[in-house]
Amino acid sequence: MKRCADISQILRPLKDTPFQAYLSNAVQVADILEWILGQVGIAEVWQTSFSISEEFLRRLFFICKANKVSRINLVLDHKATNKTLKLWAFITRVIERTYLADNHSKILLVKSESGHTVSVITSQNLTRGNRHESAFISTDPEIFARLHEQVEELITKKSVPLHELFAERIGGN
Image (tube, rainbow, N blue to C red):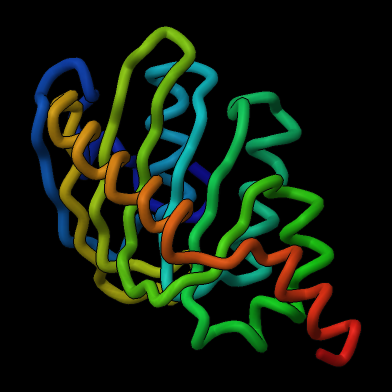
């Protein structure tokens, strides 16, 4: 953990409980992602958020550089487009699949190469605010399956790939 309290004081290991929740200002979403990956191994990740910050992208960059994820799928909100486009070059360096949609959800889904699944529903955007945030964490496969299905539907039927939107902005259309 880089900038927070000992996560073991806030959460129990995933293998010990299928459901847990917290309210704290001591951990960030990136901390939770690293904590999950440390328990399940290399995984594909789906994240939804209203917005994303450069600081969070840096954390993802180092997670990817350490080969802890196989792929990240990211959905951000259309209303945060101007901020997102400012980070476009960095986002595309870190995240292969980024989409924009009418989205205010903050979901983290992790599916390891060994088949373990973890679902996190949180109040925090992919930013650092040092505010009290809450989250519910589950290893229940049914919860993961339902959320995954809904996130994939959001991606495939209700979003625009960021690279297409950026190309439109550059082209002046």
